[in-house]
Image 1 (cartoon, helix red, strand yellow):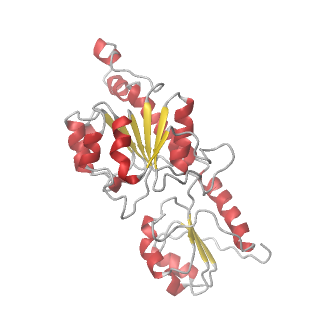
Image 2 (tube, helix red, strand yellow; image 1 turned 45 degrees about the horizontal axis):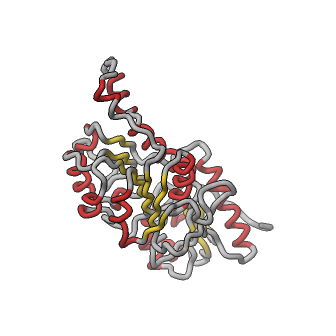
Image 3 (cartoon, helix red, strand yellow; image 1 turned 90 degrees about the vertical axis):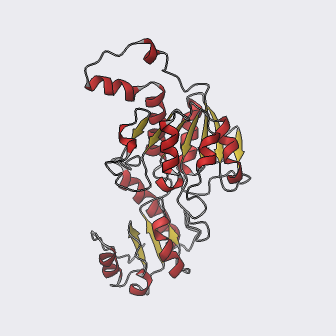
Length: 315
């Protein structure tokens, strides 16, 4: 963009973001989204988040309805989908049990362990939230020989309308054997050996998977949550794991973060947990900037932007 001036500053608080934008900001790129940003930046015409989720920007969207907000949805597809499949593999091959035995120098090759090892091929994975991460998870799961089921808000619209580099994901929605709507979640869960939750956090998805949904899961099912912790009713999940009502869980997100040291999830043998790092990778900012530059090109030509957040749905 001829004449473009770029100001780069590390902002560690909302106040610092407002201070930066008050200098005459037309476009803002960053993670933070102060609720009163528009008041400090009257020239602001577009905001792009470096995150995929926009739940923290809900107050700002209510106060600034005329300014488009876009996200970096799509750049997390590869690392988080690989994490999801990796968690499923670790659980099915009992890596988590073997690693605990390694710490205690135990040669655990007993029948109970050997008979508990499983394979992904031939199993069914239900993907709750068929966005960029869900679609790449589906592509990888399909390569492993799994049957894919998918749940999305509008199951009749199967195309991916967001950022999707060539060779990634499932742009046309051709991989799932069947699509489900939000009111069919229990039906999907009843058929799934593995469940991948990639929902954004909105008013409609808070505790989307609660007692009735968890009760609908297969007794040996394994659920991976890489979306937001509040999407699953955590106390209900804990009780189901304690009572072996489901097989296990791979959790990267939690209702409260950091996860309290007193949480029983830390010590459960059927739980594999990580501290909200499923999207971490060395090329994060490279991919984020690749997407932002494409949107900046579109912005300069007055073309439709990618990944525009719908204030009504929150993503």
